[in-house]
Image 1 (cartoon, helix red, strand yellow):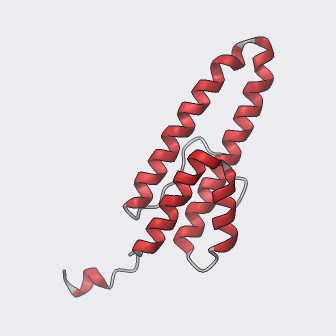
Image 2 (tube, helix red, strand yellow):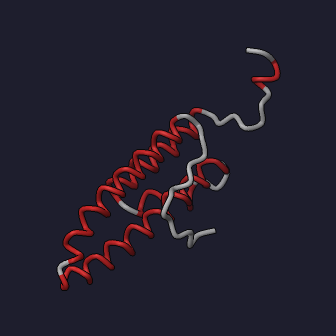
Amino acid sequence: MSIEETAEVGVVSQESKNFALLTWIGTLFFGFIPGLIVYLVKTDDAYVRGQAKEALNWSITAIIAYVAAFILAFIVIGAFLIPIIAITHLVICIMGAVSTSKGNDFRAPLTIRLIK
C-alpha cells in the first residue's frame, strides 16, 4: 500500500463500518429505534451519523407505508401491499448493511428524507 492510499481522506474506520452495519441490521429487526439511538449518541462520527440518519429516514418511510397499507386493508388492496412493503424493507436493510460493511455511503431508494 502506498502512502497516497493510506492518507486517503475518505477512509472509514472498521469501528465506523461496524456501527453503521449494526444500525442497518437493527433497523431490519427493531424499526426506527436503533437508527434513532445511534443518531443521538454517535455525534462525533460523521459516517455513522449519516448512515443512522439514512436508516432512520427509511424506518419512518416504512412506518408511513405500513400505516397506509393498514388503512387500505379495509378495502382489500392493503392486504396485498403489506407483504410487498415487508419485502422492500428487508431488501433495503440488506442493501444498507452490505454497502456499509464495505465502507460506502448508502442512500436508500424510495425514502422520504424527513431528517436532514
